[in-house]
Length: 234
Image (cartoon, rainbow, N blue to C red):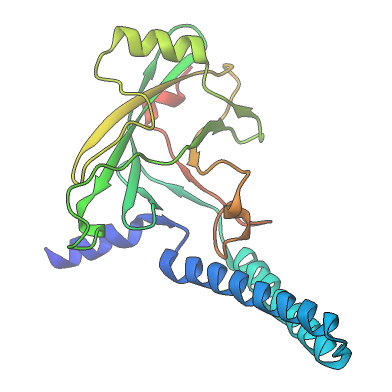
């Protein structure tokens, strides 16, 4: 049993991997750069030009090392497509939110409905956190086919689906540890779209671009979800 649990864990994906470490690296680098730049400014104001130059060089070296680490994370990254049942985890500072595709269906001519489960994994919280609710961060959602064409959810079709299916809960609703809900998105997809995959991720604008190993960092590969077979039939 424990072997299958470890295998299941290995198939899941985390965004970013080693989230606490890379978050500390970003914060630590930011604090160090701030201190060095302020120190250089104070030294320059005190006419200690040599000290100011040394501090400025140290700041440049720290920034260069971090940029190199950011680039290395992108170089070693590989695009991945999660199978149905595999989860994609997002670090929410003191806990983790997991997403997985749990269903797909035709939603009319040229429309595909994809259902995603959002789960607050209780095994990822510290004992002292308690049962306080968490509102998941905003997510970017789209389909991407083999030709590189991108399809955003149709707001009108998605709203109509959710109105007709009360079990579909809009993204972003707060959760307590162990709770989950399902959200269905409806996409307008042409019949010639081949092997569309679902992307659920952090919005592209934000500090995530500076996090080592994050899929939003420059040139980093992304993790997608495969759709059930029913979703790819015209």
